[in-house]
Image 1 (cartoon, rainbow, N blue to C red):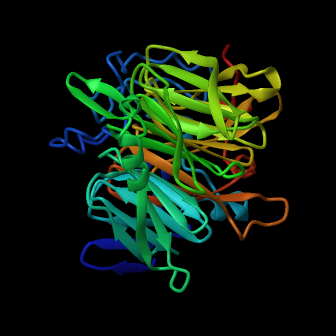
Image 2: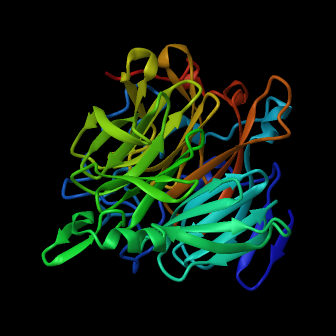
Amino acid sequence: MKHETGSTMVAERRGLNRPKLGAFLHSDPAIFPNQEDDYSNYKTGPSPASLASPKYSNSCTPTSGESSPYPMSPWSQPSPYAKSPWIIPSPIINHNLSNNGLIGSIVREEGHVYSLAASGDLLYTGSDSKNIRVWRNLKEFAGFKSNSGLVKAIVISGDKIFTGHQDGKIRIWKTSPKNPSVHKRFGSLPTFKESIKKSFNPNNYVEVRRHRNVLRIKHFDAVSCLSLNREQGLLYSGSWDKTLKVWRISDYKCMESIKAHDDAINSVVAGFDSLVFTGSADGTVKVWRRELEGRGTKHFLVQILLKRENAVTALAVNQESAMVYCGSSDGLVNFWEREKHLSHGGVLRGHKTAVLCLATAGNLVFSGSADKSICAWRRESGGVHICLSVLTGHNGPVKCLAVAEDQDSDEGDQRWIIYSGSLDKSVRVWRVSEDAYLYNYQSPRSRAKRYLTADH
């Protein structure tokens, strides 16, 4: 094992000799007893977020009476893993198994990790320290800092990095063409020029509270999420101010500001067929269609996929299979399929506390949760999903995920690198194969295939 230590940072690589899976599945005492905003990256609204999710209907996911390490949290639910057959030590029955699992860690004692973005061989991390760090091969490569506002979202478009912040600003950074380790502040959204231009017209203002008006093109609360439509050159931003804003990357102009929800927007993702999906603390997932209008575009609400009491905390879209996934505060992952006209495809039940983040790659879906684990799912034909594995190792809720293709994948064995950021101030790096299930040991009680059937 190789360690590199500094005053505040530890990066480590791990090989095959790592702790057994079961060692990570026991509840610990509350990790942040003095922290009031451990879940401040999400708004849950006035509705109760702690309603119990339905019990599991198959042997691979038994219920448990073991309590969550967050007894006072509104996300708190019993852990489903205490008696799971997954914690049985698995003998290595195939050499390829050593290629899957935890392969490294990054720990920097400067704040909870709220956002991640992977681009090529670089990983960008954002935290509540206001710093954006850039990593290459588990080593710090570069870094830059904003003046205010913890970093809640990061997206990358070419040599530009867009970051969404707690203070309601979207900041733009550019990579130096001469030195890729140098990043300079390029501007913010809306631009100063556009703000001045719009400020002279009273119709460009909206009342946000009594005796306070703000420009319609500005977010006046935390920017919680960002998403890119690369083909159209559009950036979408969702905020706790309940609005969805559409930005044109070429000239940084705000094309549209939409009062999209009745509560904070926690997630936005640009999808397929000119669709955009938003998820909110009001418990809804809404579908917006982009249509051409004159020289610009306009988005229209075309469908509400979900309407529940539990807050929607994460969204992800698989562009290739045209699937939409939604994570919520009750620990469930709902999904919809374009082939079925976005009808409800089913529910994935792998967590008993809030799902805080989602990511897709190939035929895989990853869900990170307040229970400190990551479930890796594989989509089969007919909309059936198999839980390949439960990735454990974090000591705090998993707040964000990013996925990149493993460049060392063998022919016929597609592998992915998964980055997970947590409130334990660390980033874990995992490797998962789409065929990993074939190598898993099955206990006698679960010899049958562990399918998560569609629950309509």
